[in-house]
Length: 63
Ligand SMILES: [Zn+2]
Image (cartoon, rainbow, N blue to C red; front, side, top):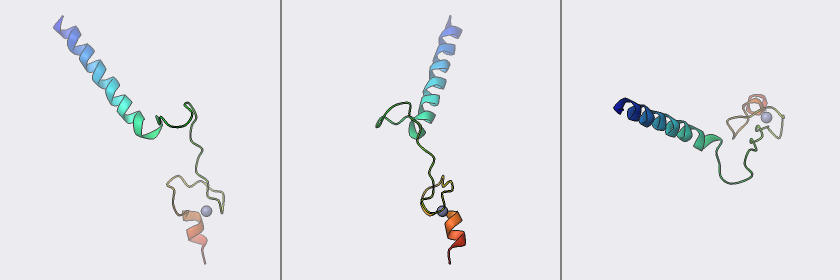
């Protein structure tokens, strides 16, 4: 019986870890749920800017 209890505890810990991993990225409470954030696009060149901030594509061609 102890084995079953320990397995259950491990299962709960794994679930908690998965929950923690999901929290900072996708699981935001504000806004509508189930709505994935749109990929960031540079307003100047229209390319993907996943990191945010200065667009590396534009910074390369600046001058
Ligand atoms: Zn750009």
